[in-house]
Image 1 (spheres, rainbow, N blue to C red):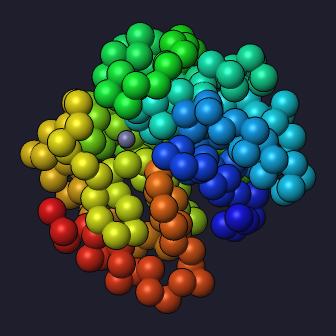
Image 2: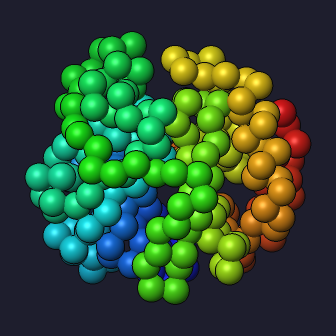
Length: 216
Ligand SMILES: [Zn+2]
């Protein structure tokens, strides 16, 4: 689904996370790896070339978001970026929930670390990294202030906030992270880790986001 200029949602199959492709350069999350063909099929449909991806941002190291990172690395040679607090999970599989779901996890090295306040830009987009622990210790969101776009991982969805009952979860931390997001002000486009995104055109989205932010 095209969200806005240069930003596409590649729907996750089954339990896979959403994958967002920005300017055919950045992937945000990459799914579990079990449905990579479905992701590639969607890219082909939208005229996106997987070989042009240079950066893969992992919003948090749960296997449904990062299990495919090793395969993507092979396919693209892209840099894989993750927050320091989720690095070990990404690199060892411990804490990715793969064991609990009894799926095989492919460990992969991080090429760089996402830091609070760091920026990642492509074309007209400039995303600031916001550390939002709570769902996992190294969860991050990406915020484009000019375009009011929040890529929220599993911290915030259109119908609520992320779970804190999984490994690495912490409700107090999540509350603090949601407070941080509230301070950003109006969000025009919400790109969550699962489920429906919110576009400017969806007149119900603003209320849904407000309700979700107030639910914790
Ligand atoms: Zn998760």
